[in-house]
Amino acid sequence: MQKNKKLIIGIVIGVAVLLVVAGGLFLSGIFAKQEVALFDPVDIVIDFYNPWLEAAQSTSTNPYEAGLAKWPYLSKELRKQLKEAGSVEGGLDPVLCQTNVPEDIGVRTVSQSETLAEILVTARRSTSTEQAIIKLLPLDGGWYINEIQCSAGEFAPEREFSFEKEGRLVKNVPAPLSAENWHLVFEQNGTKENYVPLFFGAETMCITTTGATAVCTPDTFAEDAKVLVQSQMTELGAEVVRMEFKR
Image (cartoon, rainbow, N blue to C red):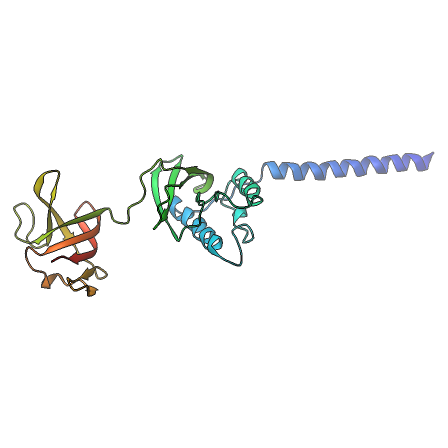
């Protein structure tokens, strides 16, 4: 009788221990802390997308074998979705949102507030209009990727240059423009004389009419030279990336 009591007590204690352990594991799974990255949202997206693209392009591995679907800065739900998608052969890549793996991708911020950041990822050098809209949420001073939505092209595709115009180089400009800077004068919306100041850096490349390429030397420019300017527009003017002289 005494042995039976000890046996029953032992079984009860064993079951209780198992329930505590199982309950702890269950609760830890539910309340596991979401990891966040202490970077700008666009940098977080780049840190995730560049390795994913490289693995997708690889002939010896893929993003799932590389463990990228388990990236800690993804939400638990998104990691679950990617795990399920990884078991399906072919079709639309759930991260790149492309049917065919692109050569390169472009990343830009669509919007960002204190409660949500939206980043757009598109295929470069491609005719594809498929796009990925990545939504990030803030937590504990950082951000994590909560959701990836594939779109057929809600947003305008990223342009490599924000300002790309053909016109003439001039320094003889009307006030209040400064004659210290070269300007591009061009036609737009029926107006023949639109001026924009040009800024050249140490890496600005110029292409001559013969096709020779070299770092631009503004001191050698000629007034009224015909050019194609490819640049990024700022509040002060156009920061020239590339300028091609025309005949």
